[in-house]
Length: 352
Image (cartoon, rainbow, N blue to C red; front, side, top):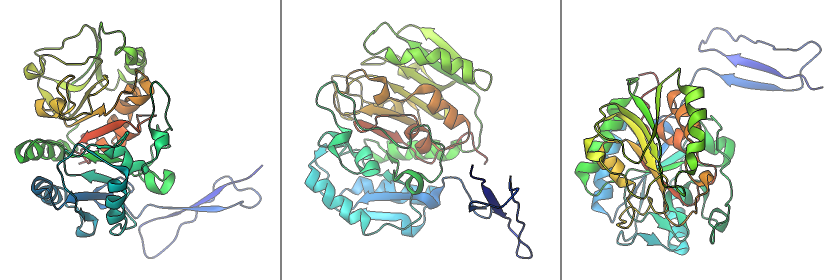
């Protein structure tokens, strides 16, 4: 049997305390745990990618750097025509090469400062940046896809530990929308907002598959945060929405809701990640209504719940003080077809 030991470095110049744990007859290895640095995921770990040919992307990126204090070395500039919703694998690889040339070693995740393109062939662009483009993350028809190694793993250094750089798009149709989103996220930090998690069991059988986790969610987290399970297709006239998860192609009455600072909301449907979509509701509608983060798929996922956020995992991570970026990425097992949108560093349940 192996015996493990750790030594802890405390923030002092005068002495080193070595604590040997469980060592009775020697140590198999020593693993340093350094308490001198900030072990959270912060602005120091986020790379912000700006498309210099997109004036809105430049404006959003510069505003985000100012509001979040992103280091200059983390600001990554690429250049490509912003006219299409989808780009080819070849074009993405060219953009990825531009990013790789500017990477610093501390970057553990990315923020994209545009709303288009949102797709790379069969993958979402956020997943392509996070995982690297690979057809194993896509599906032809109703098939599973490659898993996310970061799923349910509460690491604050996902690239170091899992070779995943979780990516989120700071998306808006115009600067006013993107600015409002950024401000909501920044203003939410450390506020520990009160509110309710609304989990809707809808009559849409195909899109209601995620509701099997709602009872588990309430049992696990109901003592920590108010959770209300509602049978019905519509939530209206609520002023305390912190979480809202449902399964419908279009969600009604969003204009009657008041979202709390840092709120998360999404709907399980086939094409919520088509951000300019008209047949089904775009996930952007959640942000326009006042949410701070959302998610949707960019091509037909079938109704595999693994391709959508696992509600108890998402809420647990967020309520534990993780950022929006970390929490969403830790909750999707098969994320290749899904796009993550919102303010990545929003952290309402962390320390201010």
